Image (cartoon, rainbow, N blue to C red; front, side, top):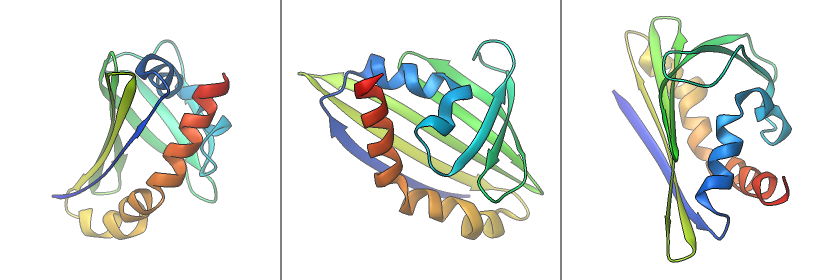
Length: 137
């Protein structure tokens, strides 16, 4: 299994960040790499949703865990899985944002190179976009 992570802090409250990440159908409003997402019903553990990355095929995902202030989902890829975790911890007026990606499976090495490593490389910019969206919405 491969694992990558990114962490930063912000003055935006954990509650506002979590509200944005839990609103799965609106990810394309702040994430430039997402063309669309579709979750029917509410975000809850076990719920399935679809994500269409810009220039890529639809990806089927499930929510593994959702609780204040944490969202964990798994993408079901061809002969591999990719788990993404978003966690927000607030202390003394600052929020620590922890983003993690894990990839495993027969073709895990392929998906690591094609998707996961790029997610970690783009994590700073993606996280900043999330922060700004949460700050103003």
